[in-house]
Image 1 (cartoon, rainbow, N blue to C red):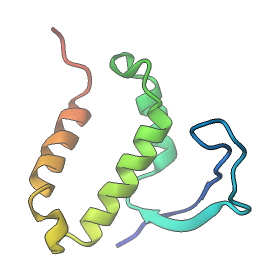
Image 2: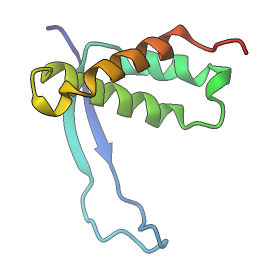
Image 3: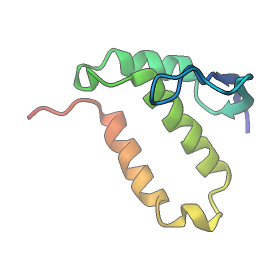
Image 4: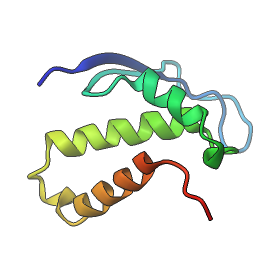
Length: 99
C-alpha cells in the first residue's frame, strides 16, 4: 500500500502541575498514512462546527489511530470498536450538519 511518510516529534514541556519536564529527549517516530495529513488538518481547521477544538491534534491523532487499526484490522483489540470508528469517520466526512 502506498503511503505518505511522516516523522512525528512529541516534546514534554511541563508536568500537569507546571513543573519542568523530567524527560531529556522527545519521543520521535516515523509513521505512514494513506492520506495527506497536512491536507486533512487544513480542511478541519476551516470547519466552523469544530471551532474551539484543537483540530491539528484531533486530525493527527485520529488519522494515526485509524491507520494503525487499518493495518491491524484482524487484531482482536479492534474488533468491537472498528464498526463504530467507521461510522464516526463517515459522519465526520459528511461535514457540518444543519440543525
